[in-house]
Image (cartoon, rainbow over all chains, first blue to last red; front, top):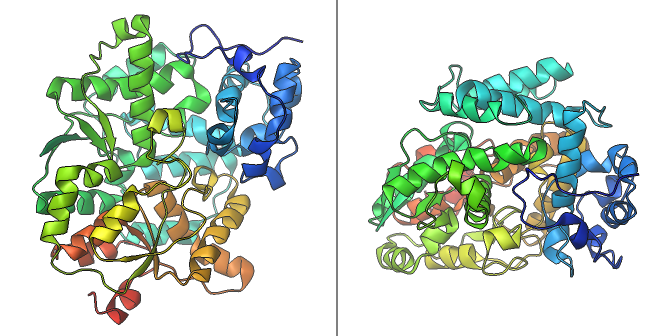
Length: 178
Length: 283
């Protein structure tokens, strides 16, 4: 099994492997994690698996998608290990390889979010939510809320195309989402 | 004082009242905001989840526009602020990336709270308060991204930030001590794993109730939207009643400065603040 390293193209300056190797399992990350009670692998366990090169266990977990990226773990870690920063490259690779996610709604949402940016250059909330619901077949969820938000003028029917949308599309072509 | 202004996507839609109240409060304090021309989305909480290049490239686009204007740029949205600031740090550390995105790095990226906490702005605020919010018991809720990751955000204190407390104090509100200033409300998963998010949000609402707060005050549009819109669902799930207004600190600044539009800003929320504020004689 392969040890986890950041891809050469990532802008993260830190060498992730040498950082995660500093973990001495104090469990402060798991103590502070707001979704620890929902997780099948706790944050300190994911760090340990990363040290052991057992990335597959993380890939197959629910935890990788339950992580809120709230960074409470990283802010409190005595060794500067930020679990979302460790999980991001694993998530990137999973998406690139088209690996199934244990909670498919989460990557479906983020992919739809990115598609919205690519289309308009900015987020158009109605397009984002509509596309996401289409993808996940969750049409009825939050219907009432959506109507209320619409009546408060918080959801616009017509999108606004950013003038620089062409530049944004160019950036997407240089990314893994091309 | 003059700053460049990056509203970001949510301030054009679901958080329009943050945009309106931010601009309104700034104008009352003599702060000039120039919106970045042709800004695009910073990638928010999604780009970093899916692609390392776009994580920096999308906000880099906006940083270069801000660079051209030559003034420090304010991003009221906590997610935009983190993304812009992280990208600025990546660019200054990576010269090859800087070749593609020639950002000089001479401007600062400020959060909305930082801007109102700026010496000159805060003293103008203290001088110009017309109607102190006396008797209004508030809990300052910073949320995650206003303080974390700390190496990116560089907050005054990642566990016990004080800048919004100082602002609320300056406008005469009663700032309560509570333990959930920086706890996560679950906002990033509110549409995807809603049942888990309801538990996290309920915890925050219950604590605000325990300390008898009249309102939760924030600057983060994801926190505001999540805590405001999910109260009806939490009430349904628990059989308890929830009606805690979730207000933007800029709305309260505007109220204390007697901005005529303040009532319209407040009218955009799901949980109405009308009865709480009128009981205290504030509207």
